[in-house]
Image 1 (cartoon, rainbow, N blue to C red):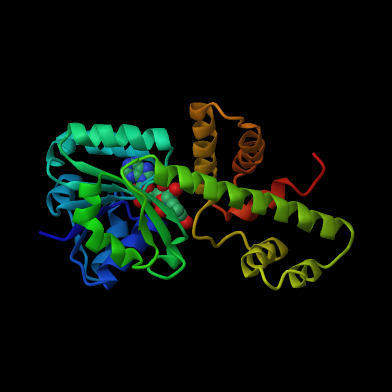
Image 2 (image 1 turned 90 degrees about the vertical axis):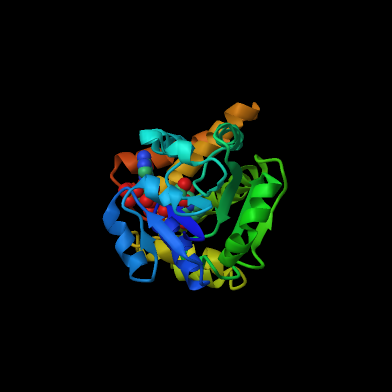
Length: 286
Ligand code: NAP
C-alpha cells in the first residue's frame, strides 16, 4: 500500500506528486499517457499499470486532471468507481462550486469521503510559501488526509470547512482578479508601444509589484513558448467563472468579454502557449 495515489500527471499533478515524494510519503502515480509516470518513478514513485490498481493502492486518492466531468467519466470506466468505497478522494482539478457539490454527492454515493481542492499557485510554487491551496468538504476526509495534504505547504494549506463549494468559489474569485490584471497589462503595453514609450519605463514605475513586472516582461519579450499553465487551461478556468455566474444568476458580461479574446487566441492556435499570448490578438485595432 502507498500513502496516497496521484491521478493525473500534467504540469500541476506532477508538481503535487513530486512534492509529496519529497516529503517522504509513499506515492503511487497514474496518468492516461503512461510515459508521464517515468519522471516520477525516477524520484521513487510507484507507477500503477492501470487506474484500478492506482485506486486500490492507497487510502487517499488525489486527482488532478482537466475537470470534474472528465474525472467522473474516468472513474466510471470499467467499474473503477466501485473501488472508491472507504477511500478519501481529494479533487484538485478545477471546476465550479456547483460541480464540487455534485462531485461530493457522487462520491458519497460510492462510499467515499470527499474534499474539493483549489490550487492558487503555479506548479513551480508547490511546496513553497507561495502555494496557497484551499480545501473544503467532509471534515472526516480532511482529518484523514491532513498529514499528506499539509506536505503540500504546511502554512499555506487551508481547510475552509464543510461547505464543499467554498474552495472553488474562492478560487474563481481569486482567478478573476488575475484575469483583470492580465488584460489591463496587455492594454497598458499597447499604449506604450503605440506611443513609442519603452515598456521598461512602465515596469520601472512599479518596483513594489514584482508579480506585475514579471508578466509585463513576458509581454515585452513575447516569451510565450514557456509557461506553467497553458492559455487553454486558463481559458477553461474562465469558462468555470462564466458557468458559476450563470448558475448563481449574477451578471457575466465581464467574464464573457474576456472569454471572447480567449476564443480568438485559441482559434489563432495559441491554446498551448503562455496565457499572455492573448496580447497577440489584442495588439491591432480589430
Ligand atoms: P495539463 O498540464 O494540461 O495536464 C492535464 C492532465 O489531465 C494530464 O495529466 C492529462 O492526461 C489529464 N487529462 C485530461 N483529460 C483527461 C481525461 N479525459 N482522462 C484522463 N486524464 C485526462 O494541465 P495542468 O496545468 O496540470 O492542470 C490540471 C488541473 O490543475 C486543471 O484542472 C487546472 O485548472 C488545475 N490547475 C492548474 C494550475 C497550473 O498552474 N498549471 C494551477 C491551478 C490549478 P494526458 O497526459 O494523458 O493528456
